[in-house]
Length: 230
Image (tube, rainbow, N blue to C red; front, side):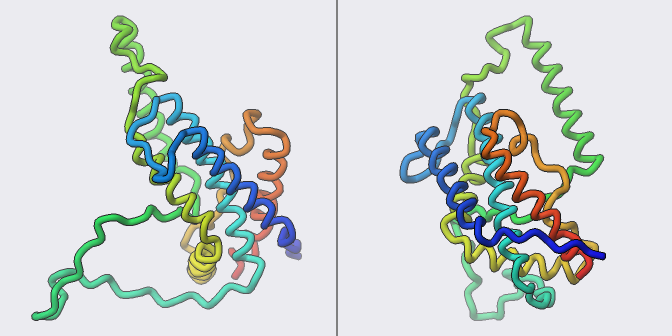
């Protein structure tokens, strides 16, 4: 007998407002300004920002998932044909010009790392440790927390998060379409990982923040059997 999923309709709006406040506070701390962009940031700041983004992205993803699942999903759309390339454009019609600037798209699904990914991450950590040991003989060459490093990927993730927070209805529509495809095709991975990132559950978060996340996470897990069973 399937247990009824947990519904949090009355509190999802409050959780969404909290995530928006946290994102605004992050932008203020980083001094991003109206453009919301920094080409370089200190290494320690990048590390802290990555943790903040993981926490907010995961929270926003749970809220969108719960909102999308609390109403019946649409029928899965047929797979669209491949996009026409330049050589497929009829003669006499100019090919569409690629867009120069595009907004990063908020990622709706998450998956646990595969064994191969875990192995590659371990290899990267071991290589970084080897470089660290080699640099101990030359302290000036050793990476430091105040070294400036490129922040493009972090800025793109932050821009995608801000875009999602500014237009939740569009994100819910996107999510419902994706969930309809997942329900129709059981080979696709479920959108919510069983194990949340440490950035959401660690002691660096205030108790009220951890409680909010666990409430959203447990509610999301309760909906996965419904999605998986179709």
